[in-house]
Structure formats: C-alpha cells, structure tokens
Amino acid sequence: MTHPSKDIESTEGNELKGKVILHCITSSISCFLAPQISRKLMRHGAKVIPVLSPEAAKFINPLIFEWATGEVPITVIEGEIEHVQYAGSSENKANLILIAPITANSISKIANGIMDTTVTLISGAALGNKIPMIIVPTMHEVMMYNPAIKENLAKLENMGVEILYPRVEEEKAKIPEIEEIVDFCIRKLSLHSLKDKKILVTAGPTRAPIDGIRFISNPSTGKMGYALALEAWKRGGDVKIVHGPSTIKPALALKNQVQITTGEEMITEVVKSIKDNNYDYIILAAAMNDFVPEEFKNEKISSSEKLDLSLVPAEKLADKIKILSPETKLALFKAVYQKEEDEMIDIAIQRMQKANADFIIANDVSLKEFGFESDSNKITILDRNKNKENLEGTKRTLASQIFDFVLDYE
Image (tube, rainbow, N blue to C red; front, side, top):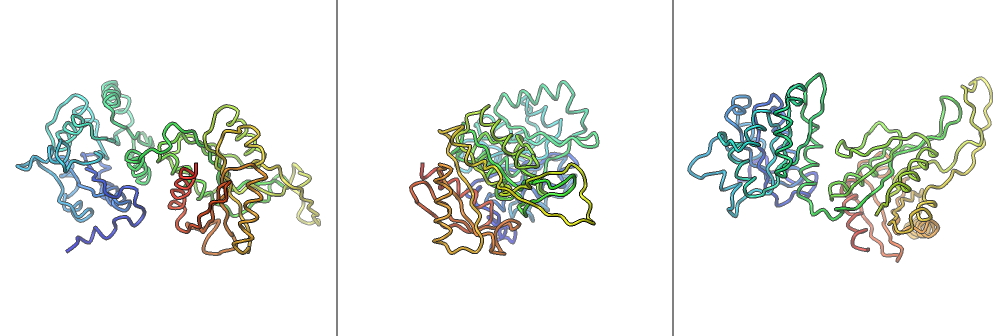
C-alpha cells in the first residue's frame, strides 16, 4: 500500500523526478518549517529522506517527518551505516544533501570535520564523496557576524557547499521562503542548459501617466515573465529581470531585479542593460502600453471637468533590440484578442519579422481561463523558420517548455 504522503509527488512539477534528497534538520527553532520543505520537494518529484540530529528530534517529533515524507527518518546511525548507504559510494547514494535549517554549531562541526551527530556524519561522508550540498543557516543576526562562523562558512564554500543565506529580520537570521529553498535545490540538480549564458527578461505591466495621479495600464501580473526568468535561473543562467509594478513580485532567488513604472523607464533600463552586457537571450514578456497620452499634466486634473484624452502610439522596445545587439536571440510575446488560430499566427509572424526576432509567443487574452491574471496560459510559439508548437499549462510549466523549444531550434 502506498503511503498517503506519496500522493503529493510531482503535483507541482517533475524537475526533481528520480532524485533522492537527504533533508537534514538541526535544532534551530526554524525546524518546525522543515516538514513543509520536505513536502514541497516531493511536490516537485523528489524522494525525500529526513535526517534529524539528536537535538532536532527533541524540537520536533520524528514521526511528523515520517507522515510528511512516507520515509522513516534517520535519527541515529545504526547497523545499516546509513551515512555510507546514502552519502558514501553505494548505489543508493543521494543526489543532494540539503541541511535546512542548520545551526551555527553544526556549521562549525562540518567545516572542521567533526562528525558526532547523524547530520554531521552524513555531511562528512557526502563531502568526501562530492555529493552536492546546500545549507540554510538560521540563527540570531549577531551569530552570523561572529568571526569564527564567518570563517567556517567560507571554509564550507571553499569545499563546494552552496549557502543559501537567510533573511535578516528582527535581528534574527530567519530561514528563507520555502519556495526559494526548493528553487535552489532544483537549480543545483538541473542540467544547466543555460550555464554561462546571460538572459534578460521583461515582465509585468507598464503605466502611461495622464496626470499626477492617474495612468493607463493593463491587468498584467508579470507571472509569465517571472516564470521565464526563474526557469532561466534554474537552468544555470545569469538572469536579469526588469519588471513593472505588480502586486506579485519575482522570486527571491532572482537577485538581479529592477522595477520600473513607465514604458519609457522600461526602454531606458533595457537599452542601458544591453549596452553594458552581451546578452545571449532577451525575452520581452512585459505587457507594455501600446498607446500613451499625447499630453501629460503634472497636477491632478479636476474631476468636475470634461476630459478629452488624445492617445498616440508608444515607442516599441522590441524594434530596438536587434539594432543594438544583432547576435542576441530575441523572443517576443504577442497578445491578440478573439482571433482564430490562423489569423493569430499570421499576426505573430508579421510582428516577429518586423522586429527581426528569433521567436514569438502568441496567445489570445480574451480566453477567461488563460491570460493575464491566470496561473495558466494557452500559447503558440514559433521560430523564424515557422516551426511551431501549441502549448497549454501552468505558466511555470510553459516557461520550461518555451526554453526547451528555444534551445531545440537553435
């Protein structure tokens, strides 16, 4: 009989399918979040084996992890010599060691080869066997600045350990968001098809001001652009995202983020970025204004008066990219409204050719279950040779499929 916890496997993606992750937990107060981390890893396809230090097992009952993962937690090293079985040279060895959370004490022990707990013993074996390792420190902020802790973190980095640094709030180094931890695990175990590649992504809406407080915009949330930027990062890319104002923010893992407000600011930032960098790929997923007010009044227009608003076509960022950077692979999005597929494809091809783009992604934003505010989308992607694919799914899934298409048709 399958353990009920296994029912959640791959419900959010298959990025970790077939991967075994040893999720090690030490005695930080943040360990109460650890079962959620384990389950999130499973939702992306991983088999998760919990490993608790003796002190962590006092903080949180190991049975919770058995419920969460369907695997019996390792709390002591017994006759099966679990540290060799899962972190040594055996065929059952794990693909990744994740220590989340990890205390200052365990950091110091692992950095200095002290192996006196389940977690430190398994970590020592994993380092000897070159198994990838991610650690997530949580402690009081002053502990992070302790010279010995800083030295030990540097030692671990020199050993190849990846450190996901905490959020510093209320003078405490708090564990990052669960989604961010999982994203780092996915990136660590990905094939890195975009390694050493520079990618620029635009996302979200822009605003065209009418007066000091009013503006024209659209319902874009940025979800599609954010998903594309995150996917590029997971594949090992060096990613910059330029995004408009939205209630939703890009993933915290995307450290190179610039928020703008207007279309003019978007163009200025992207043009500057292109001049400063040689981008391999630029993906314009932002829903920029097609029209802007002919006049702008830097005041609040009285609402008691009739307002005649004259709109003029906005400057097109897409038409500038290949002029500035001919070697960059350019992908555009083209939204249409209530168009048959053949007509939508014709419109998309014309737009792709005008911008000299390499790829274009078209979608009908009149479909209520898809488009701007939805978590899902229905798209057609084409390359300059008119190869095409019709795709439908969550925006995260589509982001992966879009990059598969782009890399396949190079």
